[in-house]
Image (cartoon, rainbow, N blue to C red):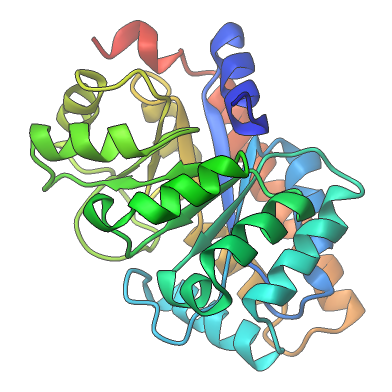
Length: 282
């Protein structure tokens, strides 16, 4: 496979530039707003965009993304609707798209139907937060047959052996959680993050994206010497929440779109000042 995700990370590596992965919850505050937000993120410099599939019991997510899931579910957003949005987005953009989901909605749809529909719509990869490598054989086989990258999560608590197993099941990139706990913006990055990245580098050649708590340009500047990409989620979702607090009017969506663009441009500027992580994280 030579997916859009792989091609984007190859281009970033050649440019010596840290990637910028942006996360938003699909359907928040309405399905119609999502393609506008994706277009804004793409134009502002997001290298990969994760579309969160809203779920009623989002255990890995902090309060900001939990509220976004609630809003998206109230607006009628389902997995099938998210796949329709991917199809719509793909008419105007070639930005790599990752579906970020819990396993239950995918199982309910059926692995084969999900994989074929996601691939046909134009998705590039899938990250399932609550699927373990040991239980992923059928999932990886079916998604691989449809040329979809399967992205798994590594954590500070993962042993070297565990990181190797997670990496072996991953394609596209390896998503490293910067800290234990749930998603959410933080003021500082954990002290043990460089050690986690070094341990992961020792077991795989996949690009490394770091998420959970990444919210400020300063975080991105620091990661430029360590990782291949920074994942920013809650900080972007928070901008949508603030702008649409009084409702999803056209002016509110425009305000959210502008805020997202401004945030990502600042993050991308910080990323461009960093070095390729592979150069200095040995």
